[in-house]
Length: 270
Image (cartoon, rainbow, N blue to C red):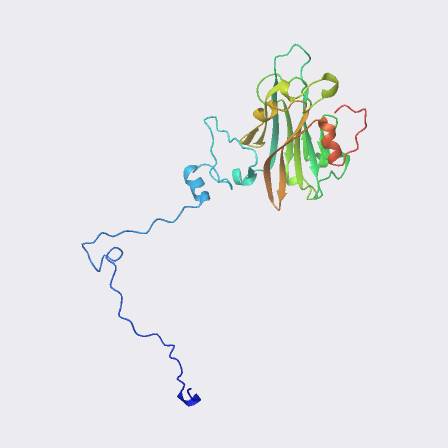
């Protein structure tokens, strides 16, 4: 057994080691005749790719913005798009809604575009926050429905609305777009009787189409559905984000109206 005086203090200092030889693969100075292998390049951020692939178009937060030969940007379900990144000059939006009725011998399908202006709790603040064919104006004129179209005949937009983003009060957090069939239950109609349903957002001042959201494949499969939520604008500080969401309802426009705090009479056909 050792005494305390015999114990040694351990030496934690690192011994001096001879220097490692130069690696001929990474150090051409050590061996000029050996091939030099360069490190791989760093990945490029999606935003940089977007700017380089589309030098004349602002970047899309979800990656490159791809416009087709008709200069249209088709949004897919689930995408979220910052509108002012698409067009920094944006102040006023034109919402266009279009559809075509299939060739049936019975009565034409009367489709309607409606807008709900919702607060932070997902509710309308007052009745005028429900903008539709019987109330063409909301937010003291900041949102203006341009009138009803009962046939959907012809090309292009069948119904439109104008939204002045700078005049919409901060109490409005979300702007929801709904397309519905008028008096569908009495007429025994649903979305299987229409085709080519779409909404699009356009810069009203420049007539530049920001994006287009087509619902045709979804709508064709919705037997007994008579209303569809087809996207919304969400406020994030100074930004307006288009959210390409889709939700169907069998109770028509009234089902969405009740959800968002509008009192609907039982005998109202909407």
